[in-house]
Length: 582
Image (cartoon, rainbow, N blue to C red; front, side):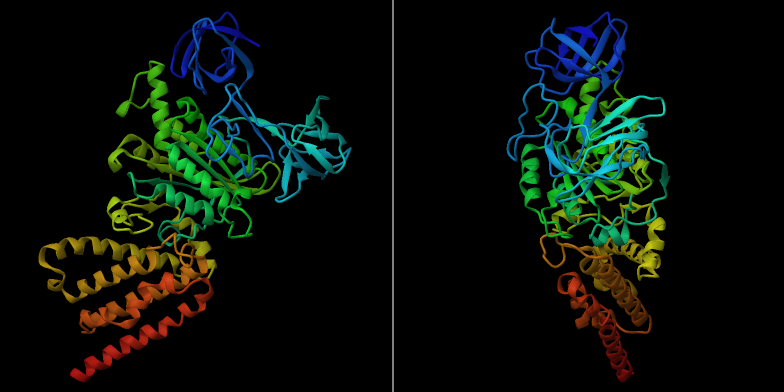
């Protein structure tokens, strides 16, 4: 192990003098307490490192010891249901964010294990050699790069996470002892056999997302919004209701009270799929704003590494990062202490590269073990004063395919989710359209485009209506405003506090979309045939459609189609009244 001596310290950054060899991104033990650090620069006989713990008390002359390995985390069955800090060290409890100085890992736990291979079998890299059974079955994977013939395998039973379960001899004759856990460098993407095109949506249960701005499984989305627009609430709703197998939630630089709320609510949430606690398939990484700033920078990489680990098990993983803006602020602070030249708004010049490296690790893949898995990344962005032209938001837009822009005015109007339909977009819509067509909505793409055009027309007409009044607009434009209001109220508004409407299945979304588009078609045809907009807006069925999500739950999906007849009957009555006057 290489040795060095601290000569200078400033916050999370230290400079140490050495005559020995260190490597870039090598993990370090800093000071007498063995604080966790990482080499970030090599300057001749000096190393520059960032420390992931409170550096209070460090002084020149304190020792620095290299580990000879990059900054890594331990991956294994003990992750699910756990709450960790940004370096995957366990946190004490829901209200206790304290860590012992120099703590590096959780105490080993014991799990029931069943072998899947025996002596003489061949083990491929990334392939399972056994499974951990219990509340949730998890495969024990061979680390990438380990392959060979199984020399020995333990019998079924209960073992510790670090106990040797399997011994393998590789083609070079070297022996490797495999346990339930293995370590992986957080800044190195885990390998896969091949990347697959993301061609199916990750269903979130939120209609404005699934219907207008879908994200593909294995895709990446940004969720920007100013203070109070509902980023955290929406991410929590997505974590509970999206159709992912595993949820990884990272609170990166969040305020302590917000993280305390997450840690209080998550353990009590019920998994809608199984009725069991949602935490059984979730991992929470909590890095509050008062924790060491360098650990905030590493937390994003820790989270994506954990997500890739479950992806390699053949799972579909959803990673919620809240928020990448505070992660970028950590980059900015550390960069300033390193003396680097600042870029736009003081952020380092490599901000764009770091964002790209994070988002590009999302993917739908064929794993080394031959299974299909995915990581879908949803990153919240907190632009100051809601300014989407600031650097973090602009750079993020370059690397994501879905942009769900939260709007302060909609949030103040208690419109949830407060995603603005005209400043948001989804480049995954064309990719996932065949999936919707194959699942009972053959005109999904056509209907989606129709609604977006209608909402754009609404924005233009509302500006005119504020000047001349709605009643002064032509009949066709008045009906356009009526139909756009119906789309907003009946389809896009969705309360996460409603037991009926907090989740909307694809079948119900498709039925609601069809019946609302049918009303819009009939209304536009009626006004073109001379029917006044007033009677159209007074149709009783319009009030029913406006409360469609609340009144027609998952147990009444079949009844939504019957509203077609009620719509047709209402317009037939208007036509008869028109003909009678003539």
